[in-house]
Image (tube, rainbow, N blue to C red; front, side, top):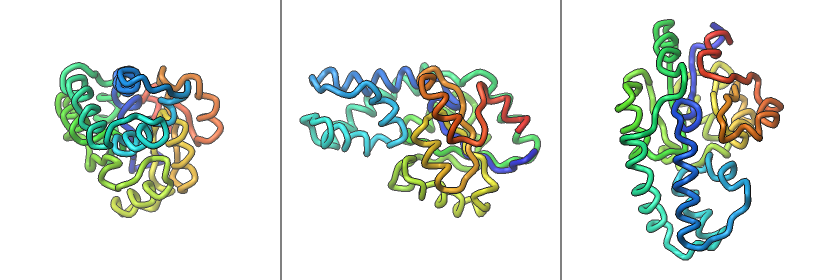
Length: 214
């Protein structure tokens, strides 16, 4: 096993949530008559909800306070994550096997703890992780290479000894700039960017079980 420390994205990597996440984000914009670029989900996915709220307000012109936007996001997202969203194929058995091999498993996601923790707990995954971090815990986003260096410091592991797994191009690009090893992973929501991800990542997998052979 080449790596003993893993840093996993959540949405689109561990859980099949990107359709629900995207629907909520677009619903907020559509309800308020705000126009947006076609690649909006690619742009906002790695940011974390506070920065998405700021982006909606400052860049797209949504006429609400950032706090009001956040409250609406959390209201719409919570029900999906608490009750409906499921783990992606082979996720639980792969994490269990990595844990059996003695690996350190960790999460770094743009999702807030209000949706992240309840979902992982319901799916029986929470106890498998040594650390579950939201971007909120670092006060920055996954488009900032420094977040991966800071995660490495918290883990006490050299950054090139950690494998980061994410389905989002912008996150993978920033992670690669930080010096961490990167594996892209397929998700339907990012299928159009698969070739871009393959160009920046060290590895590319189609389901999580393939990570056992890296």
